[in-house]
Length: 69
Image (cartoon, rainbow, N blue to C red):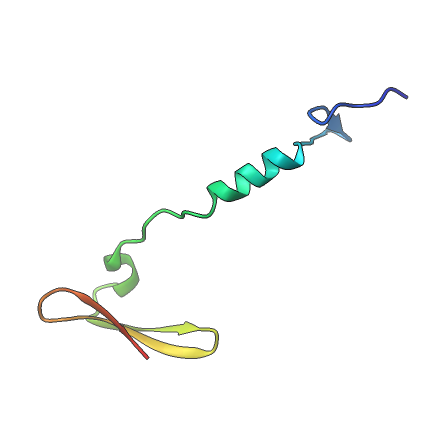
């Protein structure tokens, strides 16, 4: 059986070299921004659970955001 290069397929699945896989993961480190309107859904404040703790994201009278515990 001939040896396959790192770019060839194994069982019909393309195999990437480890360096290319790492580069792809680094690209995922910067997600697209999320609109505050999408998070707030028309409310002035929403509870956000993070690691078992409830935080409150709220819009101030000046239209700024505050995250409180």
